[in-house]
Image 1 (cartoon, rainbow, N blue to C red):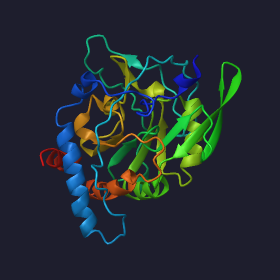
Image 2 (image 1 turned 120 degrees about the vertical axis):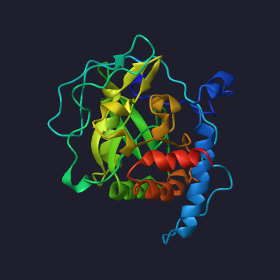
Image 3 (image 1 turned 180 degrees about the vertical axis):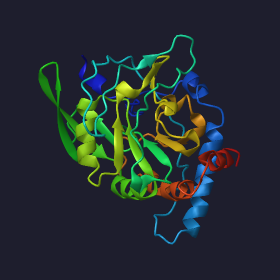
Image 4 (image 1 turned 90 degrees about the horizontal axis):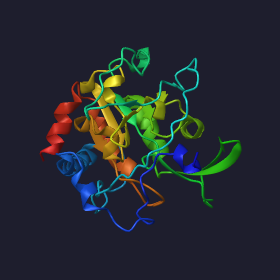
Length: 289
């Protein structure tokens, strides 16, 4: 197995020439309206907030981005863990007619913790949303994670996105948080151990929990076992939430810009969403602004 296939990432624009027009046209309807609406809503809430957040960037917090996935090999699922940290499920479902598969009889998530009752559920991506990882040495890496591939141990160098610690702690206060990544557990689980020192993630879902749809690993929110009107997905790749674009808060892909303030800028938006009994209402209003 190719060592890079354990991590599902978008391409770094520094290593790619340009975004093809076909990729841009593939974005869900209403996406660009949501970009504008979230920026505007974030600005308003920042002015009203008593907390001290860094000033908004002059550029849009949701600049155009893209996703390019390759067809990765999927390892056989391992036995299910006794806790919620690692849930190995059957291999990703592949639909035949191009439509989302029916939700499974068993939900991906366990019952809601008592401490999370009444909270909305937020599904958070890992790579290029919270961290950026590389098999190439990074001098200022926050973590170095050993990963065994075909009998050989490789070092994965992980950079944390600026303000990710503050972001995760605040999100843990506001929501039932779930890590959902299309990367393999052998890489993502140890990264999450190092990243989430506060136990923010109530569950961790990996590639085995995705649906393989038209060449992409899609995170089907209907399989979580939560009311969709109470679910939000935070992801840098539109392909990941193509089944439920109306539940998405898109974020800009991050690679190594240490001046990035995306996560910090989004906190006022999530503070507003945490108070909604139906997240569709606010997300829809942001799309049409």
